[in-house]
Length: 447
DNA sequence: CGCCGATTCAC
DNA sequence: TGAATCGGC
Image (cartoon, rainbow, N blue to C red; front, side, top):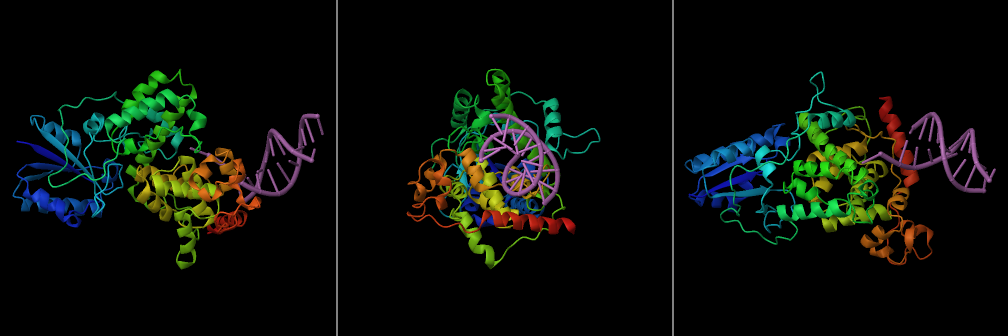
């Protein structure tokens, strides 16, 4: 008999997917089901309860064919170890590189997930919630967490206890599957990164004009490569790659830190982690709706910001440096509450991860653990000139500025022909809005 | 994983 | 005069 394992994200509402429901109900197979997303499950909450309730109801209606199990995938796999023909489907409401169903945006992935993910049920070297200080409390600051994380250590790459075959769910078809997805592609990207860009990663990671980041975030998100695999290989690259390997390990540590923070404080996904700035006055409603829309569409009139927002729309990915600058622009220049931007990013980023994304936004907004102080305001022009020195990144994404040479692309207002090809004027004055942000900061602090 | 203005310093 | 440095936000 063949057995399928169906992975659900906690935010999937079965009732919204009649085709999937029908497929599940018509199958003769036994379908053990478990809910994935180990970080968010820690928080529980209404949506988890709703999903579990709907799965339980479905199981009953299917007369026991559907075996609902919530928890560690490894345990489910182990239970099925005697099954020779085991299939797996990963169903997610998130945008994914795997292609999309036209009707409801559900993406179906059939590529193999990496064995460590299946073994551990966690896409982290050290699962969230495991690193505590001497008092048994979670760390609130990155650096001590990072040290403890190193000291804790992690197992090497794992071995899957069963030969799992992967297929689509009955009745599901895969539409528009693109190349560059799956475990083989992830490993290929990883090897290329090690060979070409790890050595210069310390500087290269900040350069959106060069393609010198790892580009592994999507693969990490979908479990196509596991951090334990990467850490094991990085250990052997340490000396040869100078600071690059060290920096990359630190970036992995940030990812684990934010997952850990969210594990302990699931409410921080959409609310300020710290309440010092709870009195910060933000703008909302119709008066800023147009400005936010300009930000979303990449027509703020600030070339570096617009390039980033257009890359996000077009590619489903944005360079990390530009994420910080565009986020700062929404929060500090448009005075908009960070969840508005975080939601927009999550809706378009293929690598969108709620812990990294939303805590990154809180870092920018000055409300998070280890956050930057609110008064640290990015200047979109200075940042652009520093990290896109030749203006190549701007010209790549903003064709209206393609006629400007070199770093002139960062300041079209200084060129007589700057606006000749339809580039929009600045929607706000950065110097003015920076002062306004600091004024509001003073107001919020005095409360 | 700041920016800016003031001040100091180097020429 | 402009680059480096410092402190407040």
